Image 1 (tube, rainbow, N blue to C red):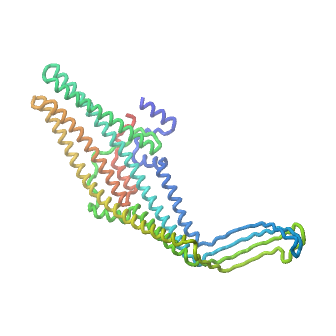
Image 2: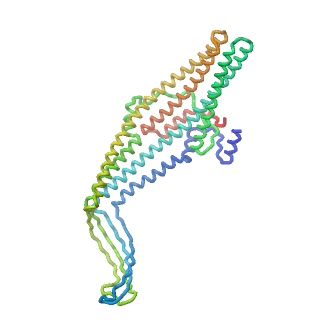
Image 3: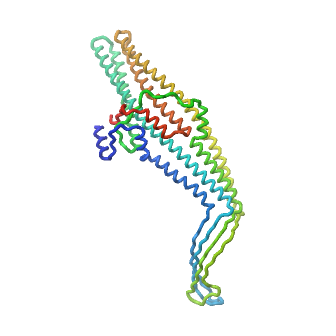
Length: 446
């Protein structure tokens, strides 16, 4: 029923993928369907406009204006009663000559634009990491499901064998109860494994907007030797100088500094070159013409200087506010710088430990397999009881799950380390994609 439903939906939506998909296919699909990634791209385009807005205050500005006025003159005036209209059309050009506040506004816009680009780089690396984690999570849950299925089958056979032995009087009823309890526990684990697998598959399909039939699985032999270079201090220094979050915080502090100087310089004189061209027209509705009233064209050019003297204390308050915000931004930068560096150092140690853990878990799995064989042999000759066998079986499947988890934890931690150092690229994703094999088909229709 599950296969029929998926195939029908795929045919209707044109999304069926018969071939085995790998990480590159998933990444390409997610790049056009993930709203979080699309939002990051639009945010970058918006942030890039901040630099243009900052420069605008230093560039010439041209303003067109038009005014229409109707006037009424008192009949007791020297020319008697009259009504007239006048219209003024003007074009004004202003070129800043000395505007310190505009200069710092330009610096602020550039810093904000740079911060936006750094945040986008962080979003890009987060996207690569998020897609890879979703893909690997499906593979992990698929392996857990197969382990749970194998455990349930093994314990089911053990329950049948124990029941047969009890029926012929070879074992007591307590052995049957022990076997049944172990089997019931495996059934509960299988139910949870199925749910986890379904959830991870649904999350991958939601991110990519497609229904996937098969995925390439993770190969057994992988180069899991730890980070290169291995020194945690290297990764700490690399992250502090290259991490996009650190760079964005530094640019935001620079923006706050420029804003503080802009508020301070707003109290200084400003000088502008002003040119104006206007056309004035008069029209008398009734009454005699007013002396001196005539249509004319006017041109003027000059320099205007202005300086704020007092604005109710608002300018000084804004200057203080901007200064405090700059100090807060500097403290925020120091916090990010410290935490990111510490996080990179911890991740480097985690990757080292994960590499050792993979090797240890692999050896533990081999030991568990040997222990199960020895226990089953002892059970056959009567030196071991069914509880020993059940314990050895559970240990084997627990070690299988731990070994599988260790492999995926190593890959994710390695990518997180690269991202924290600001170095995660599609080349790293291609490397992980090379660790997959289409011969290991992860069937998502199970």
